[in-house]
Length: 462
Image (cartoon, rainbow, N blue to C red):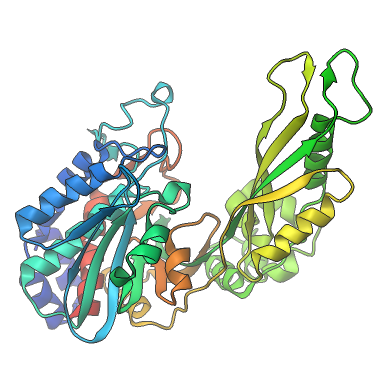
């Protein structure tokens, strides 16, 4: 146990049994040191997707598991698309899965101040693609899993470590493929920790968000076919004009706002910490959205929160002619639609088709997931609340809704209570660089997060 952690425990008068758990595990200080080194090394493993090459991550974990004497299994869903898992056997309580994805999104070196795959330690941060999304969280899972193994203590449930491919492109070579082809990995699992929530400090208050549901991705391709020709002699209708008309309808006709219960609970929890300008609206968002001037103001203030008030379709890709002077026979566009998880995707698709009626544009579905919400009535949520409350007196835990998607939608479909959560605490205004430039994680926050996640899991499994 580190002196810092010991002082924290004594100051908070944590239960003796809780302190004994720490004393019976490997030194927290040593594990934190290992975790920092592992994260730097893991960032240097190139798993940029596309193409992924997540088997490189499998090799990284295999080397560690071999050294620790941990049995594991792994498989490629396609050449280079590796997935690895290990199980610590325990009692009959519903099993716990620590789920991570090992792929990362591309990074343009031109806009970074360091090599995106450097894992550089600078100015109190670990920098590199994946530091936050989600190699940092993955290493925290590894540290927790190894601490349970090293302690040799009996577990009241199985604990499964699972590192998968392809989440950044939909998970079809990772979690989705494993559910179809290796269902035994998920047998007996009732609880799961994945990415999606974290701790945030604003002023003197710490709030932990636990993601319990997410907006459902519905990716659509619009296509139009018409008579091609020379750019100097355009017709009244062309494939490009049809697509332009369709996209203009999308832009000018946003979906009606609505507040679902999970979002209402999240906003109500946030209202406690909001200033007087915003607190009343967050406390009763269903009323606030009836004010026509409120939603544009919310979008300027917090675009991510605005996205939780309605279904949206973002226009992200377009294509037409390969030559400036040629009107193409076909034009296309793609929409990244995200819907609130209170209705099936088929209803949103039907809404888009109805909106585009008469444009001559065809709507095809690229990808559509199913909605699901995890209950907060679980022993895992209870452990998160209890342990964070003891470690950080006065902190609060909120159930949160994510605008993005994670592999948790796959496991929620299996009936597994799945939470997006990492206890890493960062300042609300500290840029993370997730999917952007100079992705980073504060070293001390990461170290504390490793120890705190271990405490939460040990509180659950012992």
